[in-house]
Image (cartoon, rainbow, N blue to C red; front, side, top):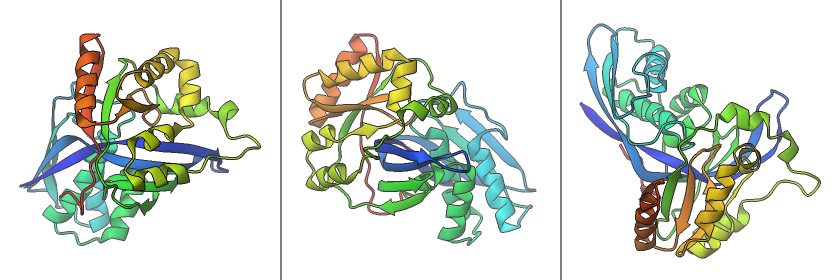
Length: 295
């Protein structure tokens, strides 16, 4: 049996320079993995059977529509080994549908884990291609840490590990922001004559390990259409920015989760407790920067 962590992610920077001719959007983003993680257990099964058990995620399917299952099928097909089978046990801790990448992370963990369990020997380039075919966020999770993503997010550049982890509080507003709808409503908010923002100031702040400077450079182009469609998100972001110990706040990906960047671990813990008392769902976590792959 193999057991793996499948971490959540957020985007400290997300710019959308333009819409591409293929209908997708060009991205320039800074991904970071979080300590909040799902847990995946893998064991072999005979006869090419795939089984998936999901715990802790009542709205997460446990069939072939789940991205983790699809990852197992894709890996088996790429290896040309139809007799390979596996039992997948997935314990969900990452809230679904909130822009934290839980499904994509689960899929990447399946690729990494089954590549070892089945000894497919496909190599890093083939695994990356399989991950990109499953979803634009999946390649990031093959290595995690801190990475800049371009293209649709699949062209990745590992970034230096910051001097210390960042302390975050995730806030779940209780409603979804469907990603396709956010992108459909993005056109009026695309960069104008001033051009797209650069992540360079954020990367400098990260390298310096300064949470105040990092908080000042957070940016997410997708927040503009999301806030216009769901004003409650804008209200929550303003509220978070005004809290003591918070250096910045941002929508995570296409939402609906927001995060507050805090000056310290104690500040994050205190904020999460206070928000919980106010009736909000809030989780304190930190960024995760493994020296190597977490498996």
